[in-house]
Image 1: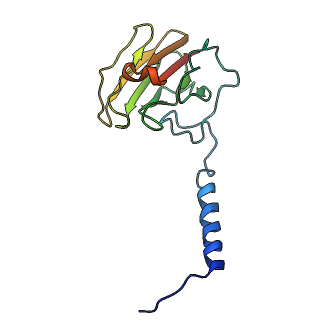
Image 2: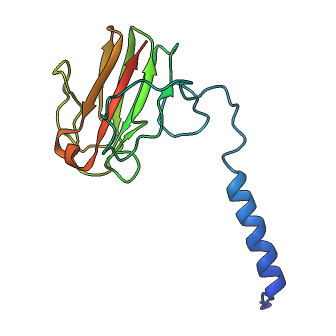
Image 3: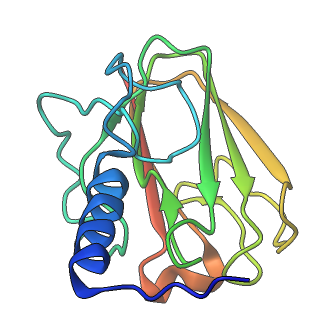
Length: 161
């Protein structure tokens, strides 16, 4: 067996190539507005004008902008996204009649999805792959929380156009 040593120049060249490949890994998407799904952040389109959430997301831990998923028959939001204490994406825009499915990641402990107005509420569970769904018919802003983690900013919203 031949033993090879790694010189500084080869190390720097290899590290730079790996860094460039990693940085470009997510850049090859189709840019078509996403798949109506998983809250993965890749290829998502945002609303051109944000709804007025009236401070709802002021202490939320995963809100950036409202992801535009209008026109999709169904939308999936991750429960336990990020470091386990967030919805992903936190805010989605859908068309009237769209079914939103929340899917548990198994991260962050036991979660639920509870509509602020009492219109819907799931059971509290921590099992990966568990799902809960609700069909939104009325236009407007529908806010929700994970009851056990509301105090740490686990909040979301569905904006129905």
